[in-house]
Amino acid sequence: MGETSIFECGACGYKSGHIRWGVGENDSSKRFLPGVCRHCREIVEIDLTGHDVLIEHFTCSKCGRPVFFFEKAETFECPRCGAPNLRITQEKYW
Ligand SMILES: [Zn+2]
Ligand SMILES: [Zn+2]
Image: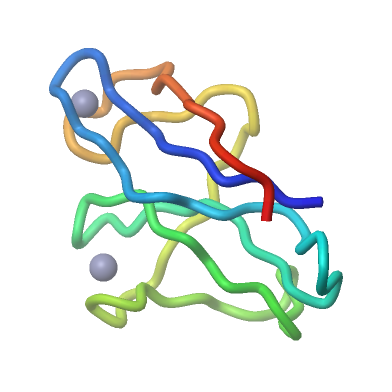
C-alpha cells in the first residue's frame, strides 16, 4: 500500500506537490519514492516501476537532470532553503 504526501517547509514556505511513495494498493507492480531534483529545487516523485533502484539512475520529469533519493527516511531537508525537518502531511493511499 502506498501513501500520498505533501512536504512543507516551515522556514521558507516551500510546499511540494502530491508525492506518491510506496507500492500501489491495486497494482503492486507500481512503485514510487520521493526524491530531490537539485536543479528544479523541488521534491519530485520518482517512478521506480520496473526499475532497479540499486543500478539505475533516475531523472527529473521536468528538467531531465538526475534526481537524488533522500538518504534517511526520517528527516527530509527542504530543497529550497536546506532547513531540516520538512513537515509531512499524509493524504490518501493509492
Ligand atoms: Zn525551506
Ligand atoms: Zn528537475
